[in-house]
Length: 459
Image 1 (tube, rainbow, N blue to C red):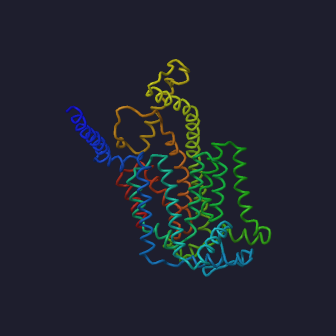
Image 2 (image 1 turned 135 degrees about the vertical axis):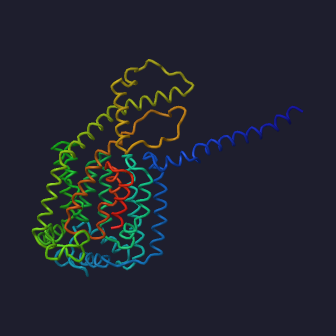
Image 3 (image 1 turned 180 degrees about the horizontal axis):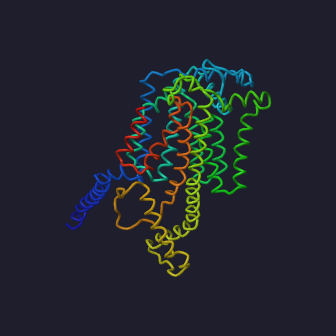
C-alpha cells in the first residue's frame, strides 16, 4: 500500500509549488506599490516606454484611418522633387505650389525616395503610415534619452505623448519635413551620448541637410565637442559635418552653386506675416522690419553668451563623471563576477587579486554621493523599486550623468526657438519632446510644471 500513497502525494506537492510561484508573482507585481513605482519612478521608464510605444502605434493607426488628411505641403514637396528627378539642378527653378524650394539637398533625396515609394506622391495613405513609423522611431529615441537620465517621472511622458493632438497631426496628417529632421537630430544625440562621435556627426549633418533649424543645437554641440574631444578632434568632427554637406550638395554645387546656397541656406529669408504664430499680434510692417529681425538675432546671441559658462561647467562635469565611470566599471564587473562565483558550489580563491576587486573608501564615498546628488536633481524622493532580500549584482546607473548633457542641448534649442522671428504650427516638433525635461529642470512645484506644459499645448 506504500507506493500508491507516495504517488498520491506527488500532485499535491506540485500544486503547492505552482501556487507559491503564482502567489509570489502576484505579490511582487500586482499591487499598489509596484503600480506607483511604474508611474513615479524614472527608473521604470524602460518598462513603461514599451507600453507607450504600443499604445502610440494603435493611436496613430486610428488617427490615420479615422481623421481626414489635410493637404498643406506634401504636393509642393513632390513637385519640387519631381523637378530634380527630371534633371534640374538649378535651385532657382525648383518650385512647387507653395513657392521655391528652400531646403538643403538631404531633403531632396529623402522626399525623392518618398516620391517613388508613394507612386509619385499619389499614395498619401502609404506616406501617412511611413510617417507613423517615423513618429514611433523618434519617440523610442526620445524615451531612450529620458531613460538614461532618470529625470522625469513616467506618468509625465505618458500624459505628454497621449494628449498632444498637434503632434500627431503634424506627423501623420500633414507629412511635413520637420519630423524627418528632428528624427535624425535625436539619433545624433543618442550617438553622442554613446560616444560614437563620427556617426553622431554624420546624423547631425544629415539633419541639417533636411532643415536648417537643427543648427539651433549647434552652439551647445560645439562646446560638447570641445569638452569631450579637445580642439584637434573637434576640428575633425566639424570637418566630418562639412564634408557631409559638400557630398549632399555636390550635384547642385558643381552646376549652380550660388543658386543652391542662396536657396537652401538663406539666413536672411523673410517669412510671411500671415503664417507666423508667435508674432501674429505685431503689424505686418513691424514684423517684416529688418531692425526687428536684427534685434531678435542680437537677443539670441546675448542669451547664448549668458548660458555659455554654465553650459561649459555642465559639460566638464559630464566628462569627469564619464572618466570615473571608465575607471570604476571594470571593478564593478569584477565584483559581479565574484558575486556570481560565490553563488556556485565550487570554491573560489578568496585572496586572488583582492586589492583590485575591492573598492577603496574614497570610491565608495563617491558612489554614495553620486547617487544622492542625482536623486536630488531628479526632483525629490522617488518611489523605491520593490525590495529584494539580497542584491542580484553590484552596479551604479552612470548614465544619469546625461542630465548634465541634455539640459544644455535642450536649453540652447529653446533659446533659439524663443528668438525666432516666425514660428509655424509644424515647428512645434522642434522643441515639444524636450519640454517635459525642461519643466522638470526648474525649481517650480509639480502644479506649476504641469500648468506650463498644459498652457504651451493649449496655445
